[in-house]
Length: 195
Image (cartoon, rainbow, N blue to C red; front, top):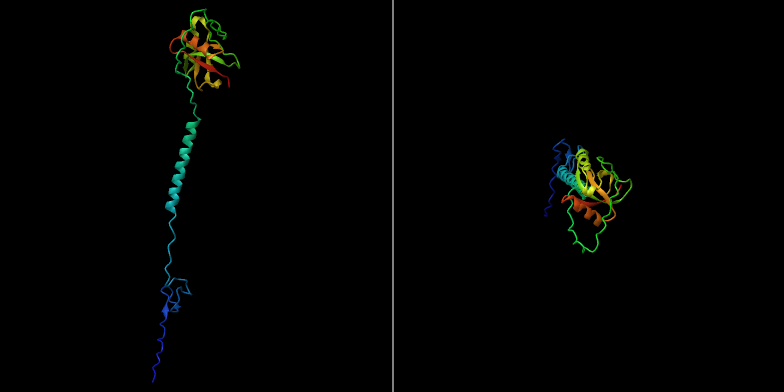
């Protein structure tokens, strides 16, 4: 006789959460939706990477802002510009005419810069406050040249925020440099261009 094996009856399982019946190949409970044989992966953690990206973007914005501030600064100082080495004096064949300064002034009153005029001048001093500049401008210039005061913020060729004591207007840098020699080592030629 031949032996026939009969399959063992499947044992019925129950949901661990609600106790509902489960088939042998069933992975989810049909009553409550609990995962019976399936492992559910946790959601990825995005907070830490997002915080790092936020901090890096803030640092990048700060660096960009600092770079823009540095680039927008005025690199041209007004006070104490280096003096050019004077050219050798020409042979004394005939005395060279010295251009006469054109600023008008009254005795004891500082000279005024002509409105809209671009020219070279001799810078005698520059200060942050007006009173010391005016006191210096009341002293006579070299060989009686008129001395005046400029507000550097009104001129594009000068750094803003200074009161500049000047003497004369000259057509060339060389003429202004020659006139500067009569004022001493701190005087230097400078181009004045209105805004």
